Amino acid sequence: MDNLTFKYSVLLVEGLKVTPQSSYPVFILLLLVYIFIMVANIGLIILISTEKNLQHPMHFLFCNLPLNDILGTTVILPRLLRDILTEASERYITYVDCVVQAYFVHIFVAACHYVLIIMAFDRYVAICNPLRYTAIMTNKMVVKLSASAWGLAVFVVTVMLSLTIRLSHCRYKIENPFCDNASLFKLSCEESVAVNNVFGLIYTVVLFSFSILSVLITYVKIATVCIKSKNKALNSKAIKTCSSHIAVYLIMLVSGSTFIFLHRFPLYSESRKLASIMFHIVPPGLNPLVYGLQTKEIRQKFVRFWCRKKGTS
Image 1 (spheres, one colour):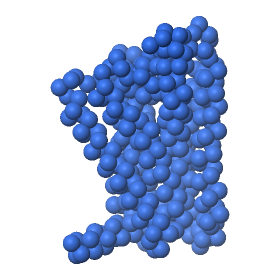
Image 2: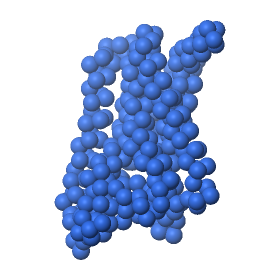
Image 3: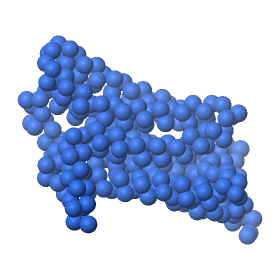
């Protein structure tokens, strides 16, 4: 391969470090996980879209979550699976493909937070303003909230990647299992990447702070309403409708915080790389189970569907 071509248009991805003996077992395990994530999330979307009893604002807002989980898993796992069965010295990716992958990786990360924020708002309206819920959470409001979540994610990530692709690159190795913004600007020549570092740090702090504060304030208000009302029926409803959302949010927060925290410790670079992969696997794999099984209407529809399938077989 021509050195100039390799330098400017083709990159080498480190991929997942596995021994030759364990490559096939790891490949099969990740393939099964990917199939499960796709079937579970697509199944939830189809179930909510086709069942009239599930066509409520809460469930329509929830559809943003499996859509994002499908995106987050698909953007890295198929290529990761291919790289596992490829020699480490042959794991090439074009610069353009790497930028595209990094773009959607960060869209997934940002949308995780924004989607769960709008879902928390829905729970707040349902519990704190139940009589006005149908007036507030109209189809138009659902579309506006969903568009805001995705639009904000796209805008911020576009700015972040634009700052990175303006840099020339003199290195060719992506020291990560997949492409992301940090890996891309580490390819730069002798140019200063201070702007990228500052923007990335501010963005991460603002995103996590805004996400945590929004969800925290929402649930403090919900808890306050429940305590003041002393209504057992209201409290029971709050627990049932909020527990799945809190569980999904905590899974996302812990998974995301782990690899961001490990970024600060170069000694644990391998653990950080593994944690970054798990962020694209654990939440998408657990979200359908936690949210689907915890939500009474979805659980009942799934049980009835499964019983019908068994009855016809």
